[in-house]
Length: 155
Image 1 (cartoon, rainbow, N blue to C red):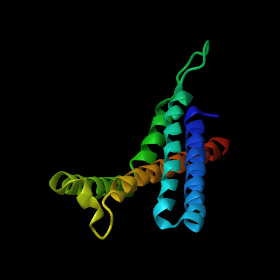
Image 2: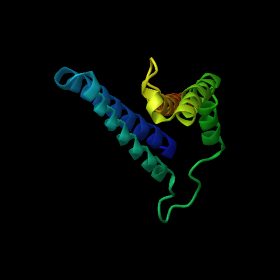
Image 3: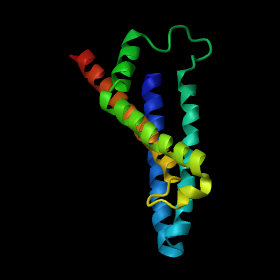
């Protein structure tokens, strides 16, 4: 199995477990603690820090010669990354979420972020979630492209 496929599978597993724990924890806490205290379930998003270990899949094995990624692998990665819709959406969320949050906090202070209709403190969380969605779609795209490449090799 190629290193990029292992990395994509690892990323999807971490994102899936994190999403399941976050949503499940929120629903359970909502039932027992109410809406304000249920927001503590967002702490499960900290498990996405495990995605930092995904780079370990790209290390060369000791005593093993050769390359980790060749041109075809780079091309598959590029096709998966440069999906215009994802890049535009991620940039949009960056400007909308983080720009608005910085403007409100720098202009009025952190206390003013709680007086708006939608709490501005949610904007950085939404930005992080959009990054997680981007990584999940990238990982799924990698698996699809490698599946297509394997079918072409068999034909």
